[in-house]
Length: 352
Image (tube, rainbow, N blue to C red; front, top):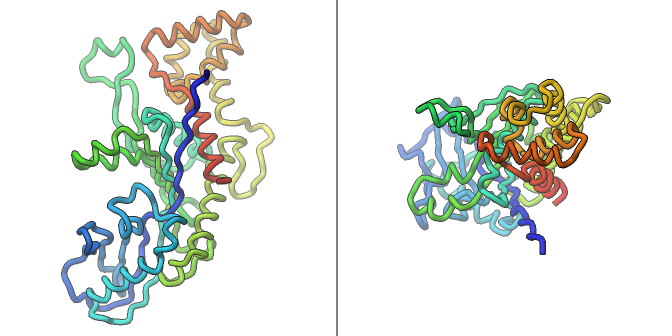
């Protein structure tokens, strides 16, 4: 029997809120807020013009960490969360009546992948999707060495393993992206390593600004925001934006401003295959040479190289041998099923 494909476990929810507090005097020097039950830090305060800015992590009010975001399953605890925030602030400002305005909110999908080794190539694929509109990306990566050729040198790396991607606020002024390896972020203590390093956790986060929250109709104050209806509207907004800014760009390069499809555009994976195919034509079907030339594309998903080979070689057996030769060379890191996994979890995020 064929092996059953493992489904992605996906949770969509809220992580950190930024709230502006209209107050003149902070009565305590301590600007860190802790959950009294176990001492987990849930928020931080800093002075801004005309008051203070509170960053508060909603899932940590209920749990030990923020691996699982604050989601629809937590709606029953919304009043408890609001009461806890108000109580902590009353302690800091000695029962002063405060006006608390929500200034930004992080909304994310936290995806447990079928294999932790898929995290890096998926980050690479997502960076390629964002670059289709020439977004400015801030990418953190580490060097890696792949292939026998690099065994002859001591220090030089021939590859980059992406760990996180960030963008400045997009031209719509509604949100920016934060996409990263959540498992890697959690590797801070020995206990966490034991619990998390065997999981591939990908987090795709949009940080909504005041303008973005207004468009989602979440309300202006913290009390208005912390309702099931308000948060549901924001989560639905996230799903629509995910479709527009990631999946639509992947499939047809739709312009997010006009929603007009470029009649010459193709899905990104087809353009990648076309590049590899054209190089096979230019280099008379030398598979290893072409694979090394297109290392960054092929290491996203080896299926791209396979498709190009089956298009180039008239004999399917020749295509199979070319792919085998590249795999056997150990010059290319082989990742498979990456694009299929992206399509599967994206469909679940948008329509789930």
